[in-house]
Figure (cartoon, rainbow, N blue to C red):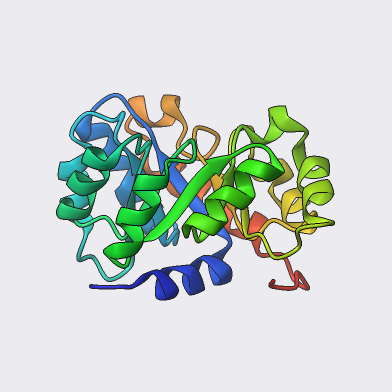
Length: 218
């Protein structure tokens, strides 16, 4: 399944949720991705800090129910490897202009990490489709997003870091375009125990948290 950045962006606007898989082994990552798919999560980011991440991305690149991306992209080489493996989007914890340009050249969606309005604007002007606000909770939570969006309402912000089922809706109400959930969704203990059913339940709970009735889509 080949999707361009506009198509991935449209799905992000609809589902409002990116799941981040950051685990200790390829086998654990495969289990987590399978559970997320079963739980109905469509956008799954496998971080390159996970052993065998590129193999996991390659294994799921053509699955009809998932759009797999690569996370923790620190430089152009990592971005190239991820795109070759089949990643449909790239996620960085910071703003790396060369990574943004490369992703855009290949038609991939790029989410660049930023904390301040200056960083956010620089990332957007370089071509980033989504601004990853990281670490969101430590930066001030939903209040930080609301304050930033007052003068910059056109930014598509994705808070990550400290975002969980219990506060995801607060971020969306504050104006977030979507949210990124990691360890609070893909729980290490559930993964270590091989509790696929528990992981599926977490995925379904997360989907419900970001799509309550009456939530207007930006």
